[in-house]
Image (tube, one colour):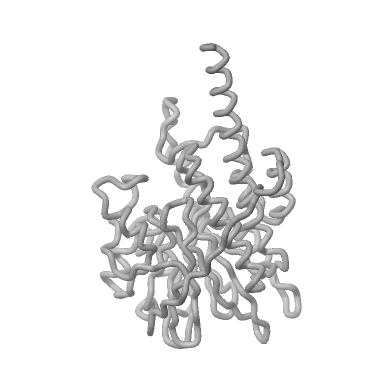
Length: 342
């Protein structure tokens, strides 16, 4: 089991550098490119204000009845499933954990939002698939939000994986008050393996390439790795953080769009044909898992998409549309202010 540090791949985003394009045109271009992934479309809603995660509208939230709670819990259930020969889905409708099976153990991507979820959903799901959680060697946490790290303590205490996260996100969790916090999330992990851009986790016959794609958080990690379907080999790309939940922050929007542009370039370069997310409604996993359950031999695999990189085009263009629209609004405000005082 080894961690291989490689030279970072340097990419300079040139989106919108040579031509003028309106926010609406960017949105239409993005939606067309990512049409197979409707769960990403909320990124393109430029007429809605961007809000900081945890911000309250002021309206009193209605308390659910017991019956509504039971119904919500039932709707959240997604049965664990083998998606490729070496890749498994475990989680619920809200958050996904992915398990990569290697010749020398398991690599787990994300830990759900609490120790209870790890104990009651994640670990039983892994066992139901014929895998042993004692074989987990690495726990990769895609970013520093508790819906992805919340179950880590249960996993570390019981199965002792090494915990992997981007360096900037380790630093975020070491702050007295992190940028985003939810009391429903359990404890953050203690710093273990810090990843820099371009590092590789190698375990047995498997290499997972790790790229720092800042935006959603400053240390968000996105992954590229091989998946197997019988004699066929495919390349999966997992986008590490999707929502624009940092408010109307121009610097972060530029980071996000640049990261998506770079990852789209990488996905083309590496012939990515499987798009994955850590939220199963984002990458259409909810529907694709249903199709996969009914798949018969020789049918196309529902997760394989020759245009998988279109998801990153959507993320690139629609986050850029958000940026341009805010900049245009600020310019109008400044112009109006000057006309008032002149």
